[in-house]
Length: 91
Image (cartoon, rainbow, N blue to C red):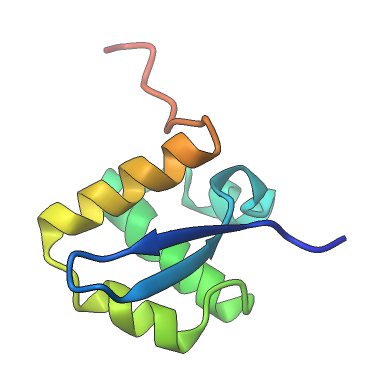
């Protein structure tokens, strides 16, 4: 089964291609579940590169984004798959 892709164009016009957010392998999410939010984001991108679901070229584009644009990328990526990061029931 071919994995569907999410495409994002940065403010500088560079392209990023990621797997659809809802197609991230369960093991990636499971291993990061107890980490804080920042570590979940870093770990997820690193795991996607390790699993060859994100190319080094696209990771390089992401690495050069400002924090604000990372937030935009994450929001658009989740919206594209109509998913969101679960919130704690204590909130």
